[in-house]
Length: 252
Image (cartoon, rainbow, N blue to C red; front, top):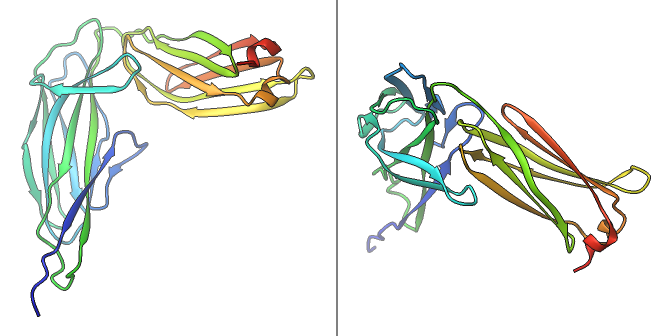
């Protein structure tokens, strides 16, 4: 029988926000977020390998900002250092990654990410002769250099209902990030009865940035609406806005 060469496809899962331990199929990372106080110079990340076989990882450090609609933008930086950059952890063991800060605190929070990427291993089952898909994990750990004085501020802006399309902007006017937990829209008819609800999960919103949300309201429902209530809940505050609805707002 002729040997059959295995085809290994690589799938990357990017994990950027988890409530507790960040983990893939093969390893866990703790903590999932680092915040440097003004005088703090260093911290650590612990990585544990759940497999019986070694796992190899590669680290990269990026400055993190956002574009005009809060999409993440990362570029290499030397403000934050991580050591070691390459590591192999034996099965069932854990290893420390040291994180150092080369920058200083300022008036506005500085934001970074450390990406921990699993590298392809050699533990392919020799009995498998067909194509093999191996899932590799890439985890992004947020790192924040806190400002000298935190001044959080969030606003809801530019609320508009036109042609059955509701648009609103969540704006970060503070000097630190926040996480938008939920954007909830509830519509009421002339009797005050809720007849429309739409929830959107949010994301990190960095200082000085904004995120525009658009929600379609079905025309038959829109014509029955008299009010729309919007609530934005973040990890440190909440805001509400209300608009009156007229039939003209529902027509194309």
